[in-house]
Length: 309
Image (cartoon, rainbow, N blue to C red; front, top):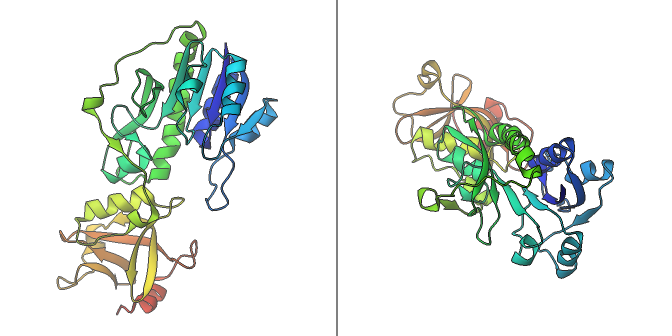
């Protein structure tokens, strides 16, 4: 079995290693150049490929004609896409003798499209997973080949879930690879009408609206917590990033007087925030936006925000 692999991020690393562990001959790895504007908290696919002696090519914005010709000339049995960030054109998909397969970070047909883990946490899902599916011209629309579910616990951040999903992707691929190596591609319909499509998210989408219920605010905090850009709010002429939080225990929520308005406050030496439904969020770690990674004390936050503690 011979393959060409398009891959990035930790899912790309683990799935490439899985192919190699199963004895798949990978003739070429295509990955992305690292962006100087992005926090690189994940492993590099290129490092794994170089160590294994596999040629590496890089794609930034789009797959050009020369690279398509190179892949076609290799005549791979399979083309794999593991968290590669660009859509692959039809001539490239057609280069695979048996199938072109993509690993997506949700239980399709739910959460097709961009950043599925973040959307799942934002919406309060209790389960997600990884899906290996046949690639089509439309994103995440092809038949399902293998799936592996993982739980989303109530206090999991998107990073926690992504770590689980990385293992789920490895398990799904490992389990189905013996069939793929025999030239068998198990398929079941990807019932698109039962799912939904979501687009990408921007840092500005992390702005907290304290007029939302506490659970909704907390889900947003979990969904974009570092190493993602983080949920944020503006107060006293300063911007603050919520690095860690929890729904407040009753004894902590009780520190806020009934007259405390919606929004952040400091009480009993604790940083808290009341939401519109009366629920309280314990702000365990706050950063000033101009000093990310440096936790503020309750006193420092109170002073910057102009609060009375």
